[in-house]
Image (cartoon, rainbow, N blue to C red; front, side, top):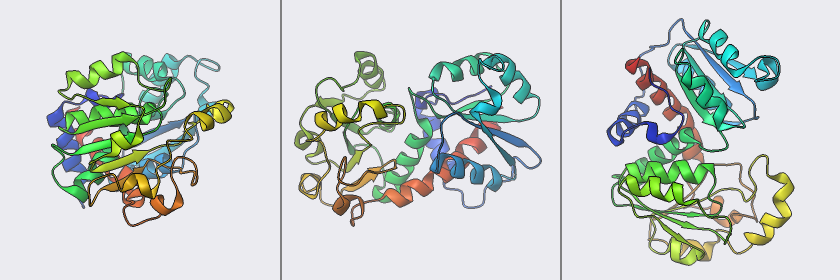
Length: 296
């Protein structure tokens, strides 16, 4: 039984297979008559809508379930809930606060589990990001991706996925917000040599893709003032974009806070690919589910 909790649960070849599945305009309705549980402890715009439509496009029936309706470890244990859902559905996609919840669900091996976001990883976003880059720039191998901001779950999954695709990765982040050594080691194990710097210009110089995310993610609102001060010099501006390669694209997983991590001139400008990137969340979710179905 295959799951996707982190992007490197896939091999590089499997990653490319999922991207290929994601580009099928008329996929086989492999989930006809089958249900997919979509569990959300955290609210979402793109994740919920893209996942529901992906299931529909595969012929299946998506069921949105708020976290409070299940009550992980309050109403019932994670294990009991997972076994219950396995009696009704063929997949569970879950957007959770704690990555350990997904690991406990997976450990039972009773139903394929897909991570729709956790505090540790966001593999579905990474898939959509790679598909967008591939559509815009062609072959991924040898391309340079610069991430400006916090070494958060989005960066971690994207950096791993980029390494799996043969891309070069750079991260510009202030002191105290960089990745742990274990993350760097995972990226290196995939054959990449990531650059981590405190200089946005150094990270962006000659890059093919410039990417950023909010300074304070969901659940970090209490740290906003501290983070705003720390990241004040890490806004993606038009001047910073000029340091990238001609033809470079700008990406953001959204929601975007104009005037903070990126200026409106960039996020709404001609180099921005945020809307194809958002749409690709649906295509890659569909591609992953179709691929996973074939593996069961």
